[in-house]
Each structure stands twice: as C-alpha cells, then as structure tokens.
Length: 124
Image 1 (tube, one colour):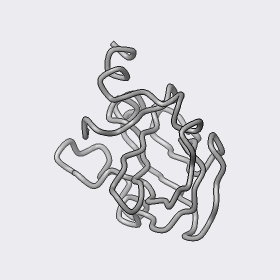
Image 2: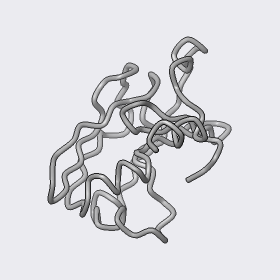
Image 3: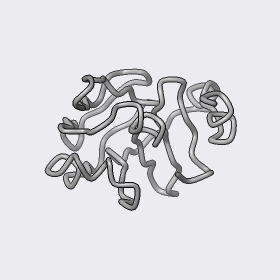
C-alpha cells in the first residue's frame, strides 16, 4: 500500500494522484474479507457524498458495503476487478483501486481521515 494514502476507520483509502484521487479498500480489509468473489462498482459520472455507499464487495465470508471517503464524482471504474474480483486476493496485483474520482472536497472532509502509518497502528 502507498504510504501517502489516507484511510478511514471503515478501511477505505483515498490516494491523491494529482488531478484525481484513487479510492479503494486497504489490504487489511481485503485480508479480513477472505477470498473475494464479487465486486459491484458505480457507473462513471455518478456523484457521491462523503460516507455514502459507492460499492459492494462479497467474499466467501461476507458481503460489505464500501463508503466514499470524501465527496466526489466517479471518473473511472476499475473494470478489471469487476470482471475478475479474485485479483484483489493476489498480493502481487498492484491495481487494487476501485474508482478514480474528481473531488472539490474541503479540508473538513479530509479532517477525520488517518495517515496510513496511523491507520496501521490502529489496526494492530
């Protein structure tokens, strides 16, 4: 995982890519879910508010809703994990992001997100 990402207490992450943000779930969340068998992602141009459900993920253990860490509009969807959700279980698979978003979120929306190092301490 990229040390520059920000994480939520519900195990989503957001990573600033300059012109947009990548959003997904942390490796910890993936490991807790177990073998992932289904991922449902939104359509491009869909807008979400902070903490709104934007995706669903299912594993052999459970189904989980995934929440948007900050408000934004989806500009790209990772179709590869929709078509092959088992790729998320592969430690060597680098493209684990779910969506890319454009966001004009202010600092207030980012205030409750944790730096990755703090997130790692919290889950240990």
